[in-house]
Length: 338
Figure 1 (cartoon, rainbow, N blue to C red):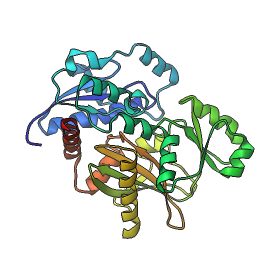
Figure 2: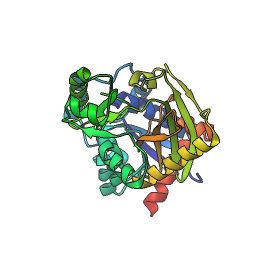
Figure 3: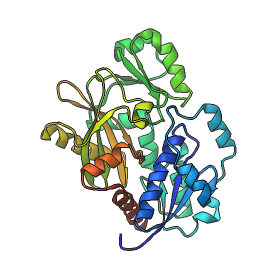
Figure 4: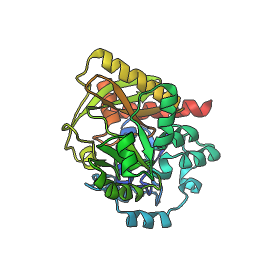
């Protein structure tokens, strides 16, 4: 980066991933300031944070459970349109440290496009498609990218058993951080899992469970980053509390054959381009006992917390967090100039 930037970091929001977004925002604010940039910390629900409030706000840790639905409803009812406020005028780039909800589904991106502002991550279409797991998987199938079979609710237990088998993953169609996700081991558990997922999205996906290893790959620009593995117990899934409480072991680079790592990187780049993503992303896979990779989803605004997978993938590729954040800003400015 040849010049110092004025950057507004947007975080918080009113999705179930609010706490994660605040933690991502804290790391991005610190990283960009460490590189000498002027950084504004902006919560999309409350606006620009004054210095004393910023310190208290951004030092909080991610809680063991996501925010309650009632607390999020209260936030949405008082949410201001920060894009119209004067504090965002004159910034060189908006860094989106938002996860889930309107921050990741293309809504905020559309507002920034209309305002003529440069922003990090993907555009409106890519953000929207990547957030919709059902749509993404349809594109994966059309492009020949292997992905677990799935059905969209309403689905009977008999249909789930016939088409997917048990166990099965039940999750909100448009949600991240495994919020509302359940590993359902028999038909009786569906009656609990589907309503739980529907608390977070009106569309619910039932997905074939692939036993195996949890693999993840970051993408930065046109480069696939280091392949990582989340080490789980057999038959387990990577839950919200595992991600943010440090209760799992994450290995970068993963202990995998070179051919498997190269395949994962190649598929991550294909998926990134297929969904029309830009700037950066993270693709999650399952690696089964036969060595087959199954693409689960692509995150268009992956977490940037101290324990998040994308920064670890970048670090294993020789890119520290300040450089990562700065390169993400540079990619945003390049796209905006086009």
